[in-house]
Image (tube, rainbow, N blue to C red; front, side, top):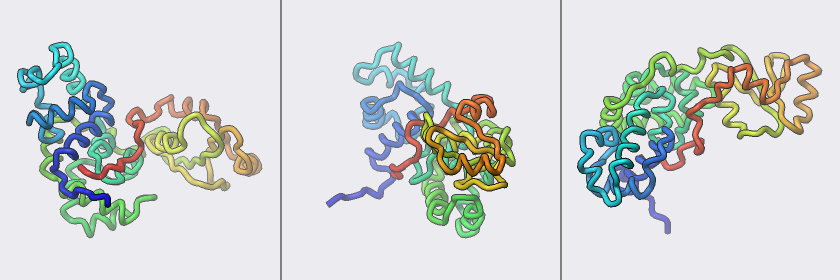
Length: 265
């Protein structure tokens, strides 16, 4: 039988949380082997400790097969990763079912990490607020708040080590603010990624075509939705035209793994 560990502080979970954070922030220097070394040596006991490695460089260099150049590259990567949006911070924590898409939706209503932490201490009332957000249900709202509450101290520790960029947390201030879009057909990128790009610029993504639609993003084999949009005189965009419309700003933090399924951190 499969046994799931529920201890969020166990070593294997720590290693995975370190890897998950590094991948979300596009740091290539810390892989599985190094994550294991950092944790087993005691150099890192939480994500925040990654940002203290500069102060512990001698111990970092003492790790097996760690050269000066490699250590410097790792420290440079960590330094360059310190500045991020609230969306990136939340999605990189590895909370169960809280990936970049959910984090983007949450940040339409939650303006700061301080607010989210405060909400986690009053979960009943906060769940009511979160479920008012389109596509956020009670289960996801509860997982988010419970995840933050159970990791409060480590999150605050991490918060003290990084910088959350002000003014870039709310995705509804973009060029598509107030616009409704529908996506159909076969596209070069996953549909979730394109939807996330739209939402990051303030747009709303719907599943059906109506006269209230502002744009239909159509790929190959678009089918009946394209026909209906043309009949309703809805503006039709291909993928390149969408990218041009939003200035090519495809959400840079939309990572290879779209949702956290680990839920162990």
